[in-house]
Amino acid sequence: MNLSPQVLPLTPNIGAEIDGIDLSAELDAATLRFIRQALLKYLVIFFRDQVLTLEQHKDLGRCFGELHVHPAAGLEGHPEIFVVHADEQSTRIAGEDWHSDVSCDQNPPMASVLHLHSVPDSGGDTLFANMYAAFDTLSDHMQSFLSGLIAVHESEHVYRDRYAQHAKMRDAAYPVAEHPVVRTHPETGRKALFVNSTFTTQIKGLSSDESAVLLHFLFDHIQSPEFQCRFHWQRHSVAVWDNRCVQHYALWDYFPQVRHGYRVTIKGDRPYC
Ligand code: SIN
Image 1 (cartoon, rainbow, N blue to C red):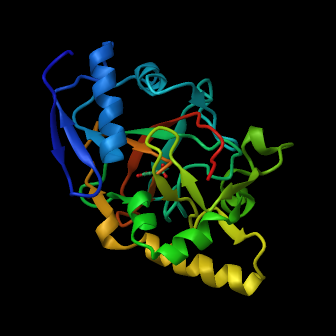
Image 2: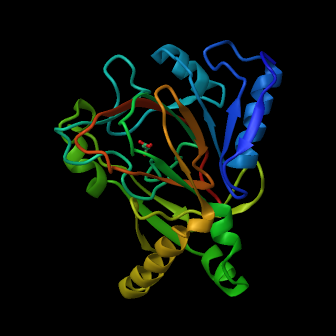
């Protein structure tokens, strides 16, 4: 291990800051194991003062698995890099609603690694919510009812305005996927709610009114402050989150200031109940 890392939990339910690891260095097996275990335990982990090139950022992502390529966007020459940017020209930003990244894919990314290069003077925090806790706090009856259900995750309403001009989307179809409303985390075996207000549009087998009411209830429940932590970014902070059991929300309270950085996502497997 390159230094002795210290873990500072942000809340009892989710999030920890890790000090003492230089992510630009090649990470040895013990450090990697430590980081992966911290991710499973805290669901989202944060690092400060990490100066990373795009290649180092991608290498860091590859420590968790093969890199995923966003279906609708990507940086020229670096298709695995998703640009996170807002300035005085922006009319919308990525991630300004609760979501799990790219849940519209058949195999949504298992984790994401975001590195911010520019941050506003204040604001621009990201909220993260624990979807195990969202499931665990439901009644037994609701848990078993939800456990048999499948939800539809669509993307055209999210991506069309934002990415229709991107070369990738000229001939491509906007992804749509069906996933269980409750998924089992493949590494921890724990159950997590897996519907989000960005991509999830309906629950199969219910009438449209029933589906809308149930989704409304779940989207509201998922936002309970007790499930959340809030991360205040500094220049060169890094966040790594587990999309299988976490949703996040990027706050856009800093217009017209600039917030800029890059995200990579890591391929995940097909969600199952
Ligand atoms: C995202 O991955 O949705 C963006 C998160 C952020 O900008 O904080």
